[in-house]
Length: 500
View (tube, rainbow, N blue to C red):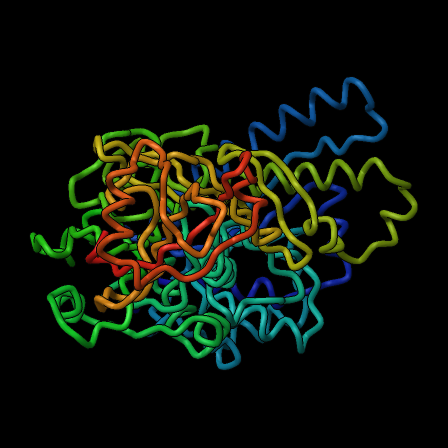
């Protein structure tokens, strides 16, 4: 997480200056307050986001003009105004102390600066400072944030989060770990690796997994803090508790952790890499050898732009910029819906009801947005694997709204064979590898003398000869019906992994 960043103080206190006339600024002309960092290194900095906000204003103005020609009496055609205050102040760890700011007292006494919606902040701690005060002051202005991922911003009164918050990612791991299907066993343990230095999203996503919360209650996890800790676990040892590793970052971060270790690329292990805001898995299908035992959790392939993370490039583009762009379009859409209603009702409103921005869907440059009843982004996340031919391919999708996993590739070609690995390290004892076959025998079933096999008869005959002690139970004739004087039964072989 970025520490000691620059903060736009005046925009923050502008939020506190609530007035009953705020909604009139939405009817007479839509005012949007923008509260963002302005620095050189944050992908959501006002330096990069402002052009996207202004571009969205142009698009919304064009929509208003077009709709006004069709229904001039019902459509709000006023332009969108941005109020952004650029006075800066250094705040350690993004903590704000506005109660001691004399200027905030003046603004609180009465100001007409508050618009019908607020864009930002992105940092969780900064947003929490607002929404925490919001509860006590009874403020009602909708806030649109591309970020604010942390749990302190969950279930707030007026905050909408345009990117999936940490609680949605935690829910993914809980439900995905419990998922059991034809290519995935149920999992119960994991190693959680939290890098010493993280981006804003990774910091909060991983914090949700290392905290003593829902994930820790449902999944037995062990925390790792340094790359050396991960490499120690990957080396042969008897005390390993899981074959599964969770981390957040890019493929480059994963390569740093693996550090060229051959054991780290083994099919015995599975890494889950959280990399939501990276489109390389769709734009460059070629993967790396080191990614073959990795599943990547990322956003769906719905962007109408290509990510360019180079902040020195004039064509910089990322999901934070897109989210604030799309927020402006959504605000415009909401205001048109309100303007189409009874004008008398509108004039009596003191603020824009936040429910217009919740439990709703809209479209933007990042694709389809769906905000739940708490204003949080839902998405059909992709779980991507690397094929044996070193290509990225979608294996599962996960709907965060219903917490449902859908198998996309039913015949994957991956390093683990036909099935993802078990969570338990191999101990050499009888494991969960089940072989099912039908044995046609003489009418006397107890003799168990096979007289007919399928095309793998030699293989199964050898199993019966060498490992008859592992025969467990017979199934009825539902699986193998009686044929003439011959009967049939199904046998489950529970074999040690090292015997297969």
